[in-house]
Length: 406
Picture 1: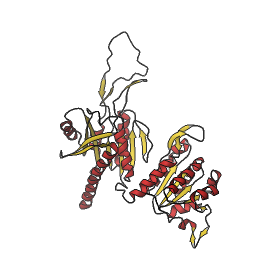
Picture 2: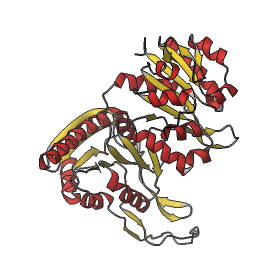
Picture 3: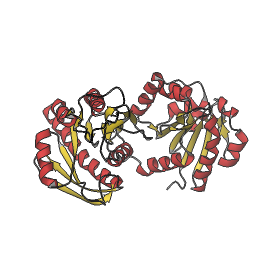
Picture 4: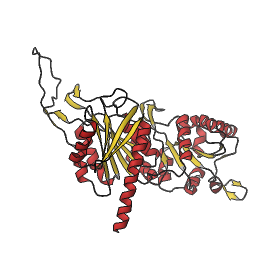
């Protein structure tokens, strides 16, 4: 898919720069044309001669080298995509604020086609609030961000900050260029929940459920690929083109979702939220006694789906999930009426070939008018795309309604 595509790679000053040599080889193997532009500090980690040899093209560093009659920062923009890998904290911050004090940044400022940023830095730098604000600013501007992975860092610690592997960057570029302008959810903000919440009994025990979070993760991935700005609120850590917020308990998830709701176009509650929590959490480990029985009193958790369905405005969509072991359609219809959400996605957890912990699913989409649409058994990734295409139509309908009322 990348044959004859023009790939511009920007390399900044970071130890992960050496990995870009393999990325260039992947592009060249796919018969793409590769040009490389570096910040001066990148030369501390990889040589110009190496990059020239691998790319088969001149490598650019200085601002005022001239190719024919065009200034280099304009000449270099004649590419199909600009990939900055690794992207340092310094370059990310300058990009977000329009600073053009080297050739790479000047080129980025003039570039009007897809840009993919692959950050790499120390974990504390990545979590710095100013860096995160700048990442969000770049995402809002339409840039693709391939968030760093967790692993062993150059500083000697384990944490989040590793540049994604060349193969992952290559696949993302392929996806972006294959997708072209097909980003139907661009400009939309989605919040998606995933995983089974855990309700603590004492410091070492908890109540939970069998949800793996795979369905919610698949929806987050598909929504991101369709151009949405995604926030994933999950009970586990994930790597992807989204903001990942960890919530262990139902109350934690409720607080996060409620706080984020006003800025969202769509909330998809794919998480399996515990209906009950322990009334009296023990600060100390509960000791085993001579009694053959033990009783734990439970109280209801917040009903997040019902709560946000009541709070949302007319331009927002709230989607719920319904996992049932019997009377699937009947119970799903009761749920959508009780919760007041826009759609319910119902799946049968009594089946061993779909649902919890499976990579496949089969669901029914049920709307407020109790209409049903069956999505036949398929991978959760494909099911997620079908769900999002259904949601896309609803969002477009809401936009038309808004225009008609103006």
